[in-house]
Amino acid sequence: MAQKRSIFEEVGTDSTARAAPTPGLIERSRPGARRGIRIWLYLLFAMVVVMIAVGGLTRLTDSGLSITEWKPVTGALPPMNEAAWQSEFTKYQAIPEYQLQNKGMSLSEFKSIYWWEWGHRQLGRAIGLVWALGFLFFWATRRIPVGWTGRLLVPGVLGGLQGALGWWMVSSGLSGAMLDVASYRLALHLGLAFVILGVLAWYAMRLTRPEAELMQVRREGDRRAYGMSTGLLHLAFLQILLGALVAGIDAGRNYTDWPMMAGSLLPPYPFQLDPLWRNFFENDALVQFMHRIAGYLLFIFGMFVWVRGRKSANRRTRRAFDAIALMLVAQLTLGIVTVMYSAPWQLGILHQLGAVVLWVLILRARFLSRYPIRQSVRG
Image (spheres, rainbow, N blue to C red):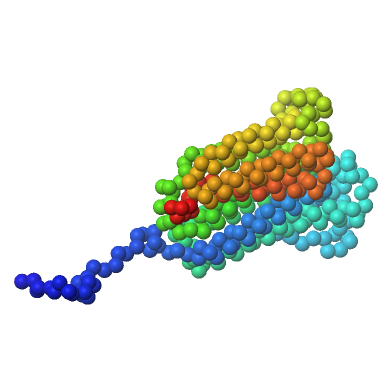
């Protein structure tokens, strides 16, 4: 027979009281060193941004073909004596860039461009080393969150592919078929760098909050804003590739009037090369025209996405789209100024870094559209 209980008995004093609910599988899984991994990803992100800037300067100073061999390990050491320097210079003198463009260059002048390319390759090695050491540390100490091991392998795999793609790009300027590297290979090389940036930024943003929270707030996300920001991301990527084509053939240093090109709406002789497809990669008039038109389309669509993003009920999401609009205005203005001043290296690098900023801002708005940060009823 059950024992009678007093109406004044305090709740919770019975030993048969219900135990506290246990967290779900996501909460009970190994959380890992999320903060440490996030810092590591931020470091890699910063190094890749510097790598993009150094790569741009290497291109603008015509230094990319100064090292004519790909030695992933032994190439880390520069020439250590005059005989070694002369050997490297002799190899450079055998390629078309020297014979057709830099004939008569002194050894001291060669050293200045050599150091740019060597520094560019060294930075690539440093990024690979930082990734490898960080991944091995977090993996060996079992600090990688559940489900993240494969994800954290992705930047390393892409980095290795980037190294091979970089040499494939450089080799196109050594064969004798062209004076510089192939512009389409340069575009692929830069495009992959932005893909790596995007992966690092997205992973770092995901690690700022627990997986359980992300799964919960995803139901509160703005699907339309997320889809439109995804489209804007793709259009921005296309514009980045076109910018690389412009840089690859120095198309930004011609046709310096705006909004016209050589006094006309359409550039002169846009299809003068044979076969036809070469014009889309090697015709400086057509390549710059495509870059301009894509820039206008990116700006117009970006403003449309901004208007839609402003309708979000979440204050931080709205501010993320505000930042995109401001950067679009700044980047479009900078692009016009760069062309009108015949693309000096200072403006060229600033324009390239502007693309990095815009890329990250679009990613951030896309992320917040899908995983909004919760706010009070008052906003």
